[in-house]
Image (tube, rainbow, N blue to C red):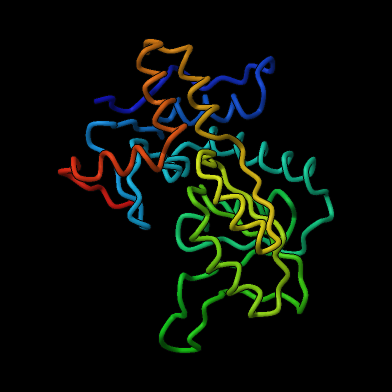
Length: 238
């Protein structure tokens, strides 16, 4: 079983692509764990041999500053500097990232609960925005994209317009993560994918055979999950 991948100090090598740099940073802060022998279980029930813990970013101010600046640049390049009126973070992992992105974009922020509060005003959205405001949804990562739909619907029910979602990490091996959102008129923007992690990991002390094994797993996630479902003895709920 592989443990946490890690490298040395944070790097800002300008010769590599932004996606590769983001992947290197995640490796630097030990945000990536690969465990084919004891796979993780997503909330959806899907098994995965990899766990990307973007929550670790909050404890690394230099890493998070660089990643958020890269996120700002990505959004400016792919969407535009005046494309949004407000930034929304999804409960709970998306909230700090939404705060940092909103600060960089100079925009108001709000956050969206997974379900209404249940008391008081019974609010699902905290913060205010005008009718038809263009809302950027921010989350830490995207796997199959299913969890984003609830937040999108809540914002739309409240009168907001959601056409874009930003994440630090996009698994990149579940096509439905893009198609589900596209069907709802939402484009997904991520700094890096699992493929970028694999490329960055080549420079570390892992063999070609090890990397190829994981690459095969991610080329066939559904069949891999089905084959290993009965073998799982320990489940780590994400």
